[in-house]
Amino acid sequence: MTNMIPNEISGLIRRARAAMEQTANVSQARLDEFVTALAWSLYKPETAKTLAEHAVEITGLGTVDSKIIKNQRKTFGTLRDLMRVKSTGIIEEIPEKGLVKYAKPVGVVAAVCPSTNPSATPVNKAMMAIKGGNAVVIAPSPLAWPVTNATVEAMRAELGKIGAPEDLVQILPQPVSREATTALMSACDLVIVTGSQNNVRRAYSSGKPAIGVGAGNVPVIIDASADLDDAAEKICASKIFDNSTSCSSENSLIIPDEIYDDAIAALKRAGGYMASADEGRKIVSLLWQDSKLNRNIIAKDATILADIFELDGDAKSAKFFMVEETGIGDDYPLSDEKLSLVLTIYRAKDFAGAKRIGAEILEHLGKGHSIGIHTHDMDHARELAEDIDVVRVLVNQAHTFGNGGGFNNGLPFTLSMGCGTWQGNSITDNLNYTCFLNITHLVTTIPEDKPEEEELFGGHWEKYGK
Image (cartoon, rainbow, N blue to C red; front, side, top):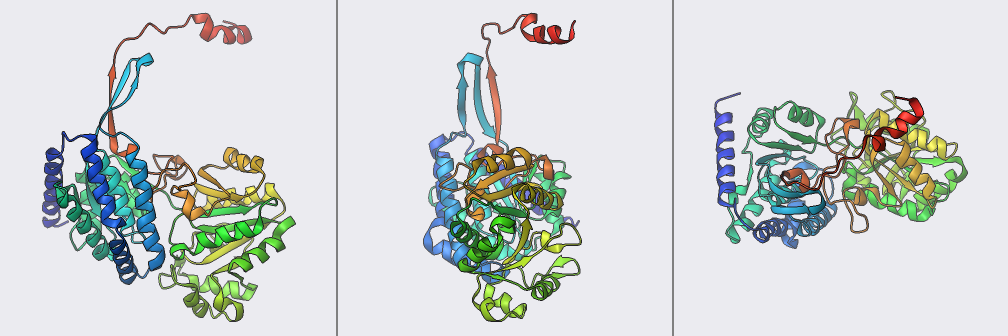
């Protein structure tokens, strides 16, 4: 590591702390003005569109229309969530327990962001961090630096318009390197990582508190009781959104024998193309090169993929491509996350078999993240929640749109999904503003709450003796 990197990082941290000092005693209303300014910096239509176009041009990942929606929808939803909560001063009083809770900043946040969401994720994290009175330094993907830098400049400009310190939001300068990102992690007070699992592991070893999120590899069950056309339409809309760059995009569908043919027919009506066995083998050989996803194929439009895969006929007008598979594990790459418009199809004997396949897929890759089901049998949905080690079980929803928070479900809006200890994460929730707060507890005495021994030990004594 050159001397320049520590000097650059120390300068960023120093300016971030100075900005925090300037805003240390501001009111909740003023913090909310900061957050609203950040949201508007990306939500405004002309900026959302320009940055979406810039992202696709720079990274070659996803689609402009989807990124416009993501830039606006995620930002708007997060602003809704943040405007409804308190994040400074007294945030909770529990008189019966003699407790008063005060929220305070965690400090300077290092926010590591991926190339797939070079605008929405930085703004999302900045809004949450600054809601708690923190400052944030964005560590972007090197590939996406130009568009993330433009995003940060837009945030800083909006902060300046309302008289807030622009240095509440900063970005690592070019060239972004592993050494610079690692140095930032070590110098900040909290690390938040969305993106590669290599970055997550480096965050955990940085010596600073870190929140990393896990890899997605979402399996979705189409249950025998499902409305097949409704399920197919939702799966299609979710799968094709931003060309499947989301960690919450469906990667596998599991369909029981009873409805298999009808479900496939519904998926075809929705825009899917079922590859033959030979076509499936060709797709696998092209999608993976040297056991890694082919960067020249991932996140590409369906028309481009049809040409690359040398598919003719109905495939030319398809919105996504289905390939049947029976195996799960390292020897079966279709059981992995694909980041492309390729959807793996598994056939199950019944719901019990579908549940087993879903669990095995997640055990292979994506454990803790999420699973979905389309069903009218809530007992089956509850069974998944009871038996599968995941943070989220989505019922009758387009997974990409619901998993990171929706206007028709109760999950917090986010672009970072915790997967619990099942995938080595510290949170079993969607990343949200509470992750950016320290809490002071004012503790006063209450009438003594000490039960008699018999109340606590009586059952044990009666059953096992003293």
